[in-house]
Length: 117
Image 1 (tube, rainbow, N blue to C red):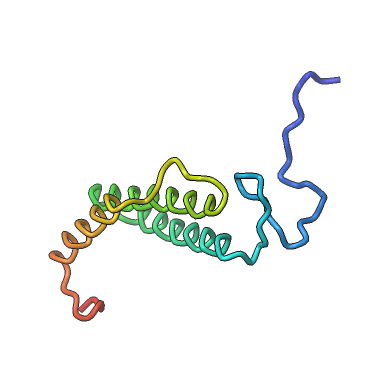
Image 2: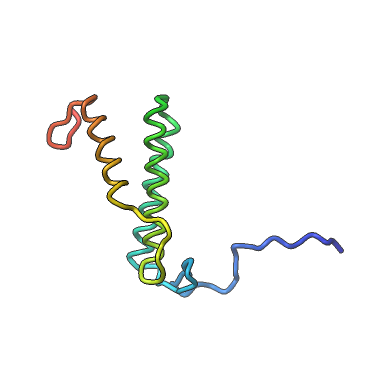
């Protein structure tokens, strides 16, 4: 018999009946808007990760990585809504940073009515 600890599995064999447990231990329906929002944020972050892997410009890679980190904060913040306060939150500082970077990039590209020309 081995003294190794058995790895904990992600399979519970209990089923979920349409619910998922969140960090707080509370149970949410899988169609809860918070779960949908978190999934959408995760998908957006994965697209950013793919873009980051294709970009060679270090400055742009850094911007994309910061955006991914901020999305992680946002997802965590949404995840805890109604249960407990998140330690880290998206604030106006995050918004100002992103707006500044958008303004920098707009100077490099020609946009007309939100369409790249």
